[in-house]
Amino acid sequence: NAGVTQTPKFRVLKTGQSMTLLCAQDMNHEYMYWYRQDPGMGLRLIHYSVGEGTTAKGEVPDGYNVSRLKKQNFLLGLESAAPSQTSVYFCASRPPQGWIEKLFFGSGTQLSVL
Amino acid sequence: DQQVKQNSPSLSVQEGRISILNCDYTNSMFDYFLWYKKYPAEGPTFLISISSIKDKNEDGRFTVFLNKSAKHLSLHIVPSQPGDSAVYFCAATFTNAGKSTFGDGTTLTVKP
Image 1 (tube, each protein chain N blue to C red):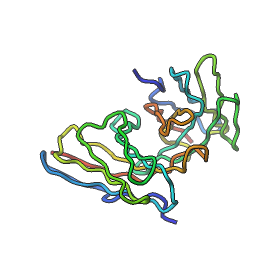
Image 2 (image 1 turned 180 degrees about the horizontal axis):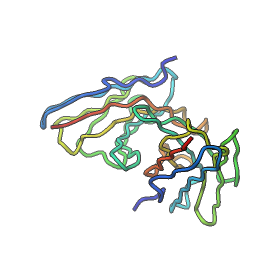
Image 3 (image 1 turned 90 degrees about the vertical axis):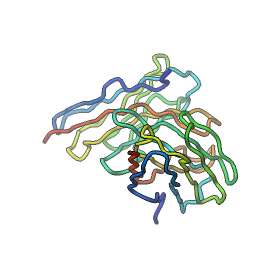
Image 4 (image 1 turned 135 degrees about the vertical axis):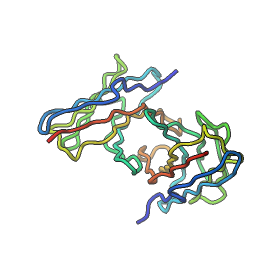
């Protein structure tokens, strides 16, 4: 049972390069999330999705785009990476509202932008 | 405006003693609270939660207390074990929010 899988685990980018982070879950969860965690700070929500084909902005959406074309996948894109986007990125998923509220997290992607 | 605050960045306790981690919130709409535990190089994992209709919830060595009037919750770990050493995040949400708001975390170190 894989749960939430993030790809890649590590990545180094140069300023201005683009990349896509992939999140896949096999629990048939409706809701999916992208968070970033910076040193000494909590998890800040970038974007989230409450179902296939839907996306919404979180607290820190600027510089990122997302897509949820399939229920099991949630993609996070950086069109033009900046050093301020150096962070650890976590994907999470959960069942719909009214079910158990807890989030299931992936193991994270360490991204460095030089 | 940070809606969920964990004012202690770190806490160190002796093995066998009680660990108390605190969390304050400002949004009175929050009605469900969760604690997550995070080890280095891993994603956070759910630990325990509490609904606003309760003031206490226990799960083994872990107990969460909620004081709604003070907008404060705490996580008690008794007895503390070295394997409990991790970062603990407090999170809050409300009905139909669809998302949780996290505190900055408290790093717990349990010394043998």
